[in-house]
Amino acid sequence: MPVICGIDEAGRGPLAGPVTAAAVILSDDFPREILKDSKKLTPASRSRICAMLMKDCLYSTGWAWPEEIDRINIHHAALLAMKRAYEGLQGLGAEADIVLVDGLFTPDISCRREAVVKGDDRIDEIKAASIIAKTARDRWMIRYSWIERDYMFERHKGYPTLLHRQILEKIGPCPIHRMSFKYTSS
Image (cartoon, rainbow, N blue to C red):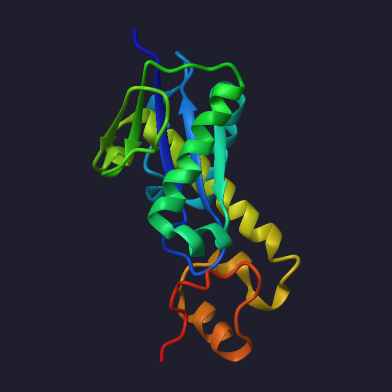
């Protein structure tokens, strides 16, 4: 049976923070029936499943930071985060026979790879990567809210909510805002 690695990312749309990717190889005995696209899980379920994945499976996360997003654009930054996640798995000694990536594009990695549209709905390994990437990014944003309390990142995780836009209109961006993204309503 081929070793499959799933890759997905979280954080393309926010106005602030990193884009985060995860690369996951599921263990043979992982209960796949609990996996779903991270967007279809409650935060509590996502956190519980993420803990199980981190305990029982091989995984790595990769990050691309706001300054990288501004320099190379969000598309290329997401691919860079995916590449970093896969290279992190290799650093653990893991090798995959094929890498399945959610979406239309794949990162430049040294493995057979395939883009799978709506893969986070169809492929268990991509669902798992979706859960880890989203959970890791959300946790990072919550922790960053301890530094920049005025932005309330713990509430919106950097996404372009009305609250976040109102805060930006009032006090302007902080160091983790993506300056290449439009954040004002004017």
